[in-house]
Length: 113
Ligand code: 5GP
Ligand code: ZN
Image (cartoon, rainbow, N blue to C red; front, side):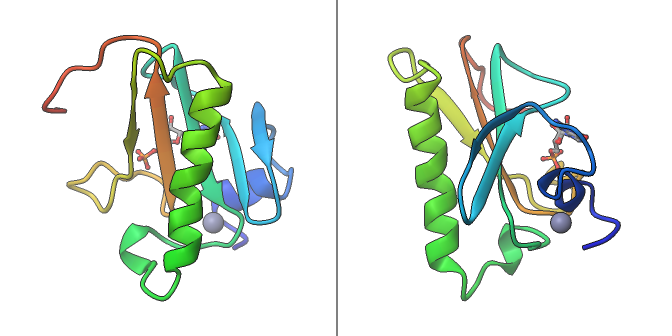
């Protein structure tokens, strides 16, 4: 999608600190990290949010397992980590292209703000 910032990152039009790429997914470091490790895993296909993934269950499952694999590679599994998908305004979603946050490297409090 032309005016979507994450589609433009996938296309290489906006630079990003790449962590992983395959046929379906792209992962990169968040520009405003909330933890020592904070990456975003996104679908290459433009999907507006997790609420629009009905019918894309396999892609959604792969998004999560890709996050797990990257957490292992980034060395945050021993202490534990958090995965987050924000949906909509009250959910804190600021970019309307589905993305999985993977955060780790420090203790994370609960509940979130
Ligand atoms: P959301 O608030 O939608 O759940 O998460 C969007 C995330 O994307 C935020 O954590 C924000 O810091 C990150 N972000 C927004 N624009 C860019 C960008 O151009 N590059 C990178 N690497 N991250 C971005
Ligand atoms: Zn997009």
